[in-house]
Image 1 (cartoon, rainbow, N blue to C red):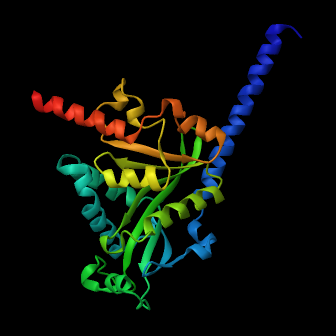
Image 2: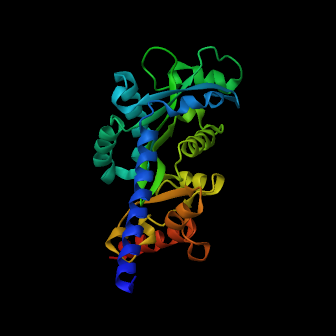
Amino acid sequence: MDRKKQAAKDKKLKRKEELARKQSIDDAVKAAAAKAAPIEEFPLFLKYDRNGLNLYMEAGRGDSLSPPVKQYIQTLLKINMEGPYGPEEWPAEEKTKRREMVSSEARYILVKQASSSSSGEASGEAAASNDLLWNGEGDPIVAFVHYRFVVEHEVPALYVYEIQVEKVVQGKGLGKFLMQFLELVARKNAMKAVLLTVQKRNVGAMAFYTGKLKYTIAAISPSRWPNTLVGVDMTYEILCKAFDADAKSILEVPKHRMVTFDMIRTELDIAEKELLKR
């Protein structure tokens, strides 16, 4: 076989392998997204009984949320996120989030306060109706997660759209538990990474993800492209945790090229000072 024929054959084979790989990724995401309640495969993780809290998890879908649940999500989002987004960005972002929350692709973890909870001072606080946002019937929701199964730069991933916890149950390990639960759900469903977006102004959240949970600023985050239009004036970072070598090679930045959160904060401070001088 001459060189031209061999090259054509090799190219055709490579193309076939690439299509098979992409089909495998699409199939994995479709299979995960077809599950109405992925968290129910982990019954041992559907309760959180520690640090004075007695909570349990229920699954939800964006297109089947009840009116009280929709109202709760909108209210908690506004309380927690209006500040980090700021008055300039929040109105438009709120409209976007309202559309996203009711999508058929949206999967939820609804964290509820068990009505039988009566132990511990913190649990008593959480059960006090005047401290909670829930206005519907039944056990009150005190936190929620909105996540989806997606393909991000040819990597099958679980993307955390929202993880919101009411103030009365913050600081008790719930956020860390939920993120670790999501990582377990991702691995179980053949996802190769977990991704999420964090506002740069939300310094506490950024420290939580990059410090306690060891997430890194993804290679696809705007700050990784400072010399292009992609990175201009973006107020958020995309964080990631990849589970295998292939996903790491796409989503994570090698350590020798790593940009730390402190470096980004310094750049933002310098840019802000320059703007004030004008």
